Image (cartoon, rainbow, N blue to C red; front, side, top):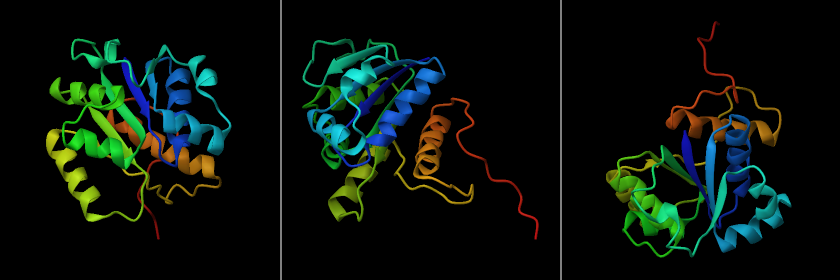
Length: 187
């Protein structure tokens, strides 16, 4: 399996970082694109750098490099995930505006009928963002807001992050054990 992961400049970069870690543990070929804003947020929120992530990915691309493989629909991938997905990137994808490699790769993913999972982390949501989510969904994207559940009784923030990463993996058909699934509740 070959996956593109985009990490955008929104709070919650830990979702993307953890996703890359899990894909590496599962031995899934991962191609990473990190926006400039995400690099700064990543260092602020996690102390993890793009250089550290490069050691557990197949390849990292510059978000401005439109001559790299992910800029073309002929680059054979199985899925793309953008976690977190900034509202700017969501808007670009919803409106077909490919101003970055992340948005260009996402549009290629949609036109090639490959799963595209967008993980917005913004709250509350304004009307323009809601409309852009609908447009992206109508174009074929999967909208997976970073909304952790509590039925699996998380004990740490990492448990809540793993829940979202697990839900992402569910959307692209990757088996995992990141959280306990819902079962019948006996009274």
